[in-house]
Length: 195
Ligand SMILES: *[C@@H]1O[C@H](CO)[C@@H](O)[C@H](O)[C@H]1NC(C)=O
Ligand SMILES: *[C@@H]1O[C@H](CO)[C@@H](O)[C@H](O)[C@H]1NC(C)=O
Ligand SMILES: *[C@@H]1O[C@H](CO)[C@@H](O)[C@H](O)[C@H]1NC(C)=O
Ligand SMILES: *[C@@H]1O[C@H](CO)[C@@H](O)[C@H](O)[C@H]1NC(C)=O
Image (cartoon, rainbow, N blue to C red):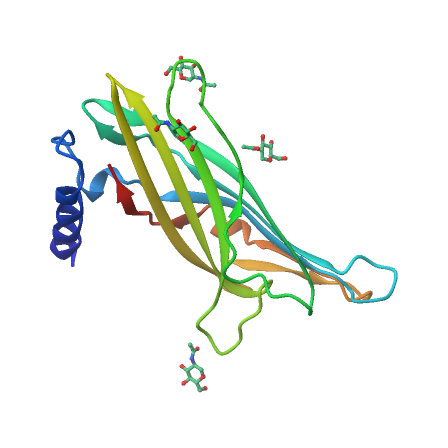
């Protein structure tokens, strides 16, 4: 399995630009960390907001080798998905996150995160209680006159009783968040595009 992965990755790199002679194997892709994953569903009562929410905080805590000794800086992002409860479904919509990190004058590396809620492949699927989340990191960098670019993506399952818990109030609102003992939830990134 490991060899297969490595092979797939090597093939992917072979498609990249020739300037990338020092491409790194998968071992250099450290897992991402989800430190917040909360959802809220409204009561549905007249006069109350009909919006449901999903909030996430994700971090890529490690730099990613770009080539020629250059690397993409670590970054973090806060993501919010809002939708009208029981009218809309939030699935399959990539939403831009607010990205932070060390995008200082010292670094030319620019990172952008998006989040997408995906319908879980389970018997009980709900966008606030049992769902998959796909995070996508697009990052680019100019170093030594070369432009580097990578898109990475990772998907993780979140569900009540697995890695989330919370409560529903008498009014009908429900709030769920990560179990403390599950935090941070790790997401394995894979390279989607590279140059
Ligand atoms: C994410 O939200 C937290 C809590 O509000 C805040 O401290 C942090 O600076 C935010 N990060 C980004 C990248 O916006
Ligand atoms: C950003 O990166 C530069 C150069 O690596 C470093 O000197 C600086 O301390 C970093 N800033 C933060 C907030 O991490
Ligand atoms: C769905 O339910 C069926 C029947 O109870 C079970 O065999 C199957 O494993 C369940 N699938 C999932 C993804 O939980
Ligand atoms: C990186 O991406 C940003 C936003 O898409 C773009 O403005 C910038 O020119 C890109 N930089 C490089 C080096 O490709």
